[in-house]
Image (cartoon, rainbow, N blue to C red; front, side, top):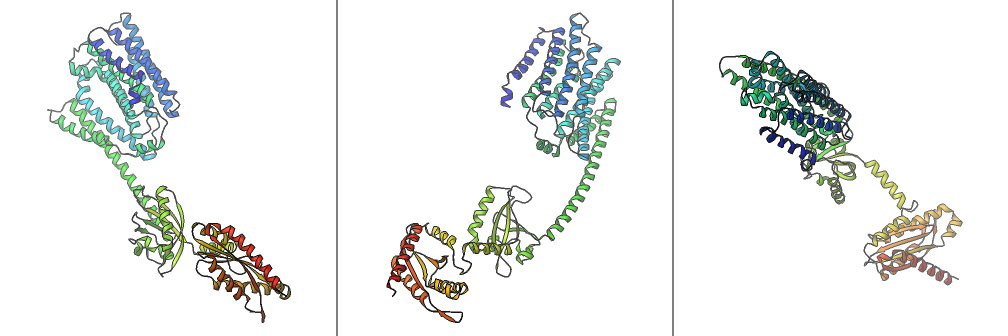
Length: 604
């Protein structure tokens, strides 16, 4: 609004209108000047309406409306221009039939444009918009009739009465069209522009009559000039304001406005009923009273029609909701996935029937319990991080695999899709859709084991060994040792007894290695008859002692295929810091080969 108030053209229009008031009240402007100013205002109306019709942000329906306004304003300009010329040539102060015809034609065009503009909505919703607008219009008409039109029409001459009646009817139709568009939310103008436009049109149609009531039948012509021009200035300012406020159309906003109930129809009903009471208390019924009574009957009929439509819609809505509820219950009842709604404090607010199949727990028993208490202790840190991601992305589903306790006390792997729905007033919690992931997790674990373990011996492979080295490197200050083991005499067994026997030897060696290692220590098969052992937290002396034990244990005879076989082991040792894992592996490899060469050198 600040930007609108600072518009120089709008300021010029407002200041010009304010200057017209003292100009005509002081007598400086007369009848000819009044019609000249009105014609100039009409031409400016055409210019502003033209710019609105060609504005890039105005949709097709809005452009059709503003093109109709262009024609209406042009008709008014022609009529007022004719009256201006007639005044200058001495035709007298009487308004000509030509001017009235052009102005009424322009108003009729505006009426047609407002009534034909698309409402939006469908079926009964559109009918309710019409009924609401008609209800408000009837209340306005009742007040106009009682306080203004009845007396005016009864006191004027026959031709004047018909002209005043026609003008009033056209004005009311325009007001009806504007009200209809405001209620629908599809109006091609903003609400403030619509209200100001209605005021301007009302002043144009009824200004003279209102002035007659306020100032008497012999009202000062100077006052009448002002009363005639001020509404025209209001209409001109309205068009300029609408031009400034034109923005790209937001369909969602229009839908919200159309769905939002208006209190104006109820206000109109109450006001009309109070007017009936006032009119009846004012004396014997006369033409004014009967007009108000007819208005009350019409507005009551409109309200009854509105309520019948609303009742029918409510019945249809209840039927539809019942059908949707049955459909939802059938869907949830037979769904294999479990749905849970969890409050922010972690307590379960809703659990679907699938809870019994997935967790072995009745849904009613799960409601009110603390869900983190069912989560495996090792998974809780991941769940906390998962919750942080959820809260940072409301409305977005986030996946996690987690273990929840079953009714039999065991933990079951579940695939869970969580969505933060706190922004939804009907839910206000986390929605969790979960399914049993036991088979999927078992397959995942098996694939993970195959990818990180040796298929023959079950020991870690190079991939897992490197991963453990990298994990140990997170603590650069801790000691770590590496053993590299190569079997002696294994090739001879392979050549003499076959690969099957050789494989059994490797399995036996792997079992003996595993029996010598403690928690956190990793034995890996690097390939062929080569093994490695990672010893986190172990110094050089302890590693050397373990290397000697490994050499001794592996050298013990082993019964394979009903025969005793023996292999030796050359073990290389390297010790250092955790961050030096790759260097230690190379040094252990070099130490292992040195030991193997020394071993061969001592053989006869």
